[in-house]
Length: 439
Image (cartoon, rainbow, N blue to C red; front, side, top):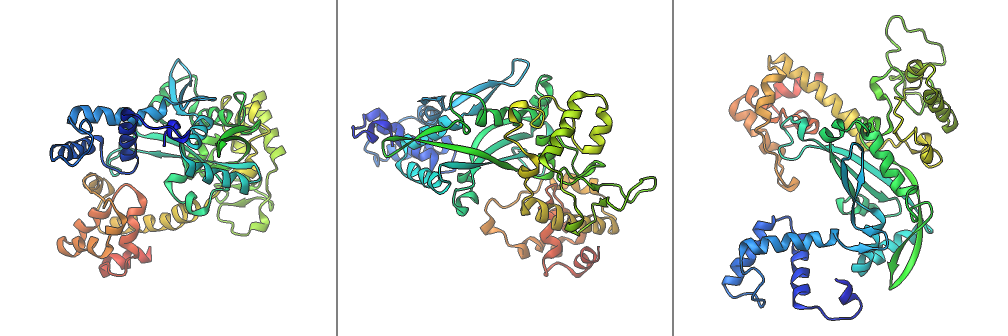
């Protein structure tokens, strides 16, 4: 729905045509060329009332792209929906301004306005902001090509219904950035600096933000809402980079506990009864670090007198542009409260999946199948596009048909979760299942 229609006016022919194109692109996963070709066929058969819609494939494809891009150029009291920020060395990063996006969506969609106002009402006017960051590689996910990897940043609100938080539509895109570009920018120190810029856009910068309040449209009136930072969701690697901490590979592996250490089992490590290792499952023995204690460690790193020793003892990497070192964010980000360990990454990925991958690696080694040999073959694998079409028993037919060696290579892809079904499916050949289970 356009602003003209929302005010009770009538569409012009051009507006009506652009609205149709925008809705087509929003409600289908087909490419613009496929949509343009479809409209052209319908136009040639005389099934369209509009003589210009789909009259030319090339022109229609350009019009579809322009209709989608029109939302990015929409003007709001917070500026354009898509804006740019300087991330260092004159590199400009295009991002979707959160308050401009919310204002624009509530102005063009009555359904979204009702939905968002309901979330604000449930949160009593103070939204709890969740941020999610993850890395992905476009194209074939089984092909190792870190040069094409990107980091995507999303955000949502805890007062959204659970079903919406479980859908991609419930998470708004803030921006995407190629990791290669970020490494080439000297003035921007990693994803920690990018997360600091993002959080300052949310809570510090501008006349309106989540801290001071922002406005959106509800039933033709302006409504003010606020927000507080609730935490960052991500895998262990993502949280390590966005918070600038050492993570599980470091000697001080847990940022939330003061007495959990890695390599405590190795010779030469002097420990006390107060210290525990990563294998400790007794939560009563963990000694949590307070937010004030973390801030004191950060202050010692800023002073720089014994920076290396403090990094080792605290598990925090010094990054002057990072989230923990930004003075404007000190009262907003409290890592003791905001470091989120979600079940998917902690239990399913780092727990169950790691055990399955370890068993798979042992099975491959026992069958004299080196990992390097399988890697080239895995790049040619194409996973089903729809999970509804996945039948693990039919996947294992290749194991039975071409033998154990070819079958394992078929499922030996780079992405860890793809290895799991082979070793947990009861229909797997006895030799593979036995090896995978015993390891």
